[in-house]
Length: 450
Image (tube, rainbow, N blue to C red; front, side, top):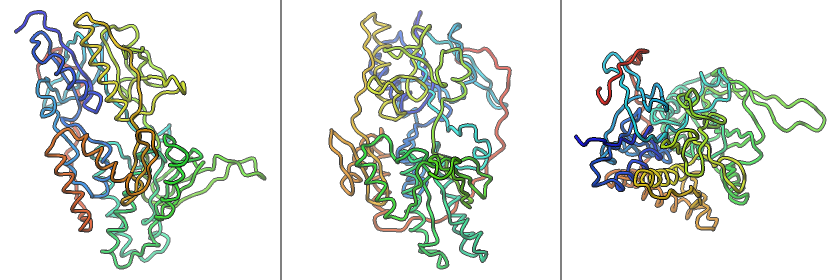
């Protein structure tokens, strides 16, 4: 054991946390005085850009997850949920269960990359009844739900109930919402061939967006192209429309634009059994109840991505507040931004340890891409706007190249190839889970021991 060994602890196994660990491994590859530790609830990196394709059955579930231990081979990995961060005592505490005891891990340097969770904006009934698209489990559950609705609708004789079963509402017109809506319609139209009583005109996919346009991160030209293409494919889009409630069978919405002859916003009701919520994210509760200074739930960082008042502590990704100097608004929470911040944080950690000069974080987007339906996409790439088939092809090539493991790239490529020639599987997997483990409130103060 090396005396005075410095320990860098990274919290979070998403794009930001994993990329930071990989960069640190390269910086300290032959340095026995540095230990890198990564803590995550899951033992895999989820490739979230392809999550809607898992929900639609185009890609197999395991093909977009990469075990963290195979990506960060020189990093000590802990699977666990963060209970508390003590920046004064330099301790991170993990929850314990009946099968494993909680632990406290000391750190010398800390990187907080805990990501975000779905933001329901205080709509508790929506949170209870809606489906989300944030985790791998969300995608699998949604796919099961869609197929279940088809099975029920096929033999349903009540026309009102049948219409409700075949109506799917996606809330949020950003990347996640539009890509989910496109993949969802593709799945429904493919699967419909096996349900003789369900016709194309029976299926409704509705996108609700509170803003005046979908895909706000794109140029007006690409956003309009996407809007027109989605309408052409059969997806309904309602702009300036906000959800006020959802009880599992009816979603109540209001128009944010007032009618000229009426001071009150127009209220409408959509009968649906399936509402998919992709309308926003918020930092995880661990961040909100931490001792770090936050703004709107995000940790305030300086130009070097260090946390105010705590030298040697960095925050990156969705949980960090970093303003765009051009718009004076926070950067959009994307994987591209998370990886860029991870590289800067790793560089500055190395500089801090080696007494070198740190660098400020400067972000320059490489472009944006989205798939909006079968073999159709949009892309803003290297200063050019691309739409249609070529944007779809570019999306596939870029994201395929970003998958860290070669075997996973090949598996995804095979899935895409199969999809060109065969219909999607309509088997509904019944998932049975054990009762969740209770988390103990009192944890053992043991360093580095399960």
